Length: 227
Image (cartoon, rainbow, N blue to C red; front, side, top):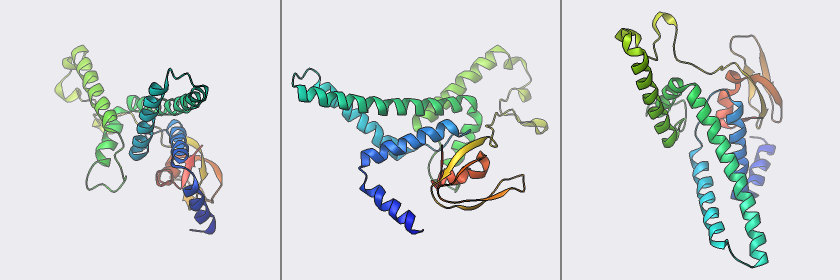
């Protein structure tokens, strides 16, 4: 860690928690909309954000109807801040649900791997409990619909939605080689693009357009951010 990283950490601690949460939520929102695959659910951040939204809603409800001009102006500021947080949360969740709907079986497999006690690939579950419930119930309804419509007429060996017979997988997967814009928050050294001879060095502050598969792990560790 160099002097710039130390100074960045000191300056970050001086920023109020509310401001840091807003900045982190904005980064998560941008990353989720840009990344071709679902990113890990930011549990601690979302708990703080949702709790703050709940408290602000209660405050707005308590102060609604106050005839004091100063209180009314404060209420307008609180409502404006509240709507900003609510917009980011809604858009963030919509981006995640869209990916869950596009790649349900792939997402379910990754979530199962992330919750495996012996797994070392991720530090947290891929999905929140509500997202996991939505995914499993949605898949159950789809399978029941497909089964009643046409799958029941097929042999049992052809009724699976995750069949990989013949080396061809029926599980839809995101395009891991999609190009993304990213910025290095720390120096990460040399990065090799899999399947090519391309090797480049990513220094702090550098902005690159690169395959998602090449910088995916650095995004997960927080050393690189998507823009």
